[in-house]
Amino acid sequence: MSARNKTTDLENKEVSTESEQPRSLAIARKGLNTSKDFANFMAAMMSDLVEGKVSPGVGNASCNAGGKLLKIVEMEYKYGTKDDKGNPNKTLTLAFESTDAKE
Image (cartoon, rainbow, N blue to C red; front, top):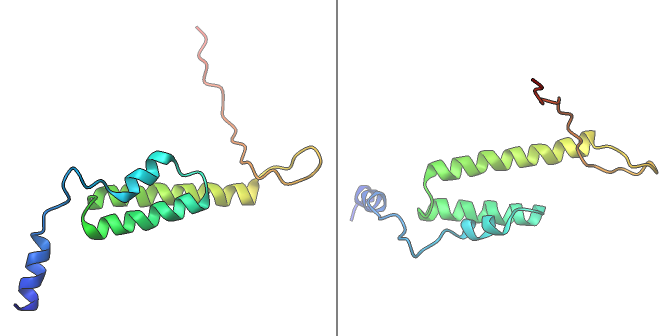
């Protein structure tokens, strides 16, 4: 079998069935609360993408959302506040304008 036929065979492979849940889905359902959770999720997502268990669109959206989470961590480290004793709190405090419309 030529290399071209092998590629064609891979392209025609069926995407996973309903019974085969992506590994990244189980991790995401538990929540991504720590850096270890995030790393495990991203590793599982890469495997799921390669195995065809998730669509490229889902993988792209997950990676984009992951990038946003990492940006929040970076901003907390860079701009985080200090507590009353001067210890770093590293919680990013966002300022929102009040949008309460009074009639």
